Image (cartoon, rainbow, N blue to C red; front, side, top):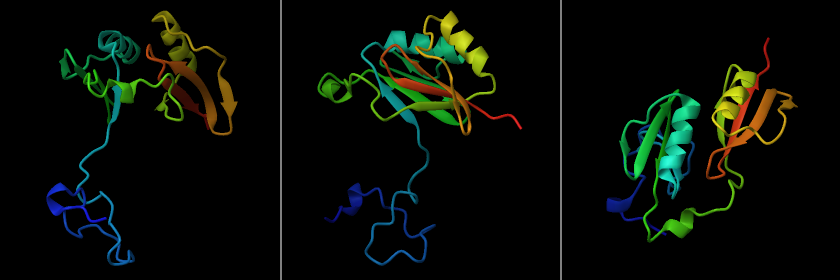
Length: 152
């Protein structure tokens, strides 16, 4: 399938394309990719924004009646109200395999904070080969993995 150039995400020439990629193979989006961010759809925008504002202790910028965005250590977390015509696309009952992973310095403090804002993690923290982590959930059931690396 050929993508017409006026609709192509592959525009931008061969700048930054590895030389060992065979001719005719799509080069990926890296030449035209300017940034990436995570977006969560929610029909409870105010509740979600309130949770993330309390949890992260930062205000969303921008913040409109249908969209809010938090900037967290180089990650943009966007929360939006889906259009009525495509709301079913975003109505999953659980996170499935996708998680918002946040590396933190003080797991015990983060657990205490989640508990204080009314969203205590449902289970104990886990010791893993790479540190300690806990699963928590936002008001829509999106999984958060809070991870604290092993101290050296």
